[in-house]
Image (cartoon, rainbow, N blue to C red; front, side):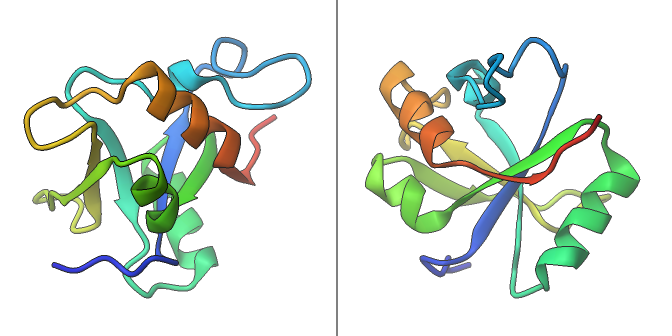
Length: 119
């Protein structure tokens, strides 16, 4: 399934203190996972529907990056629907490595938009 450059990929971020700097910005550690970065894709849904869907299932703050941001850092997006979540998508380093590099995660953290801040 194709990705539009302006489509957003949403991620819930926990815990509040660990993945956030004192100035309120996101750390790159929030975007690192050895199994690939788990997100929910927008898929033409209104912004509010994306946030509501995630808040009903997950805790924490919600951040997003655009597919264009992922392409900018040369990350790969893989649509990975689940039985309980048809929007699930992974952001990967590339086709062979799952975890984003430190540089990819750092740049995506800088580009990330805070869509819902818990607390």
